[in-house]
Image 1 (cartoon, rainbow, N blue to C red):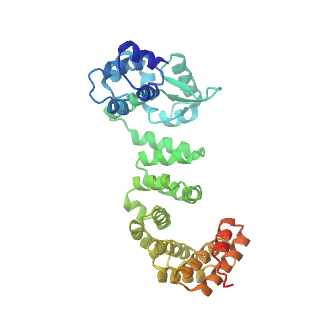
Image 2 (cartoon, one colour):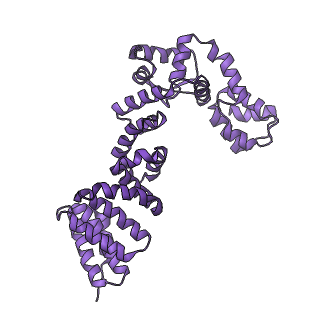
Image 3 (cartoon, rainbow, N blue to C red):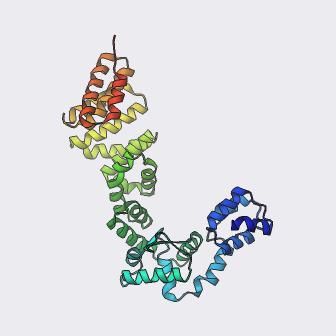
Length: 348
């Protein structure tokens, strides 16, 4: 292991964990390891240095700028800087991001040229269609782009549009957020909110939402409802209230949407252990939802039954659980069906 040998040769006295971190940060790049070793001498807090070690470190920065970056022709430098915003590179994406006059063929040729020149680019597949920059080199390029005050918003916007058009929706959201393309980000986040929630990826959704300005969120009532649900599910009912009020006002005259608002309010009432409010809201929501809306009716009936059961209204609870079983059977929601069976009151 290169980092272990370097540790022994230069008497760095790194722990096995620190050696592993150093190897990961430099990806085995021997010059990077040597430069890291130079940087480590005189460091009082080795752990902090290794955690922050990146292309912005002055030894790495000086070496890469002088020995690598400035030695490249202008067209290569321009390509490197403009594609530095990308986590992964492929010719069609690079062509879309760099400039209107770069063809896909030109972009592919540039990527192959960089690989042949060993310019810190790593192939990600055997067909050489996808690449990424060495992480230290990518750090350098991004810092150089910031220092030169390049038009990163335009680059991020182009990257977002390409990723969205090609089905890479998560990366598209990240690029739109980086570009401050709030409307495009908000629309795409809303389109993915249900899928994220079903897969239990609430944290991803919350991180995206926290990157959006509140004014943008509040101009999208459906997104407010999504956000309120996510906040409630993460145990933040007070934070959910304001966004839920926006959705409630917008959807008050739309029974289908309003029932979803009520469902969120029911969940919050349950978190706050407000059983009378849970019961009242559940009954109201069930009155708005069609009898054939099996999936939402099963969940609402289960919540209603649990509220009745907790408040000691056992006969009413039994009726609600019976409804939940019937609806969950029709919707093939086995989780709700098992819960409703488990909670069923048996007077015998």
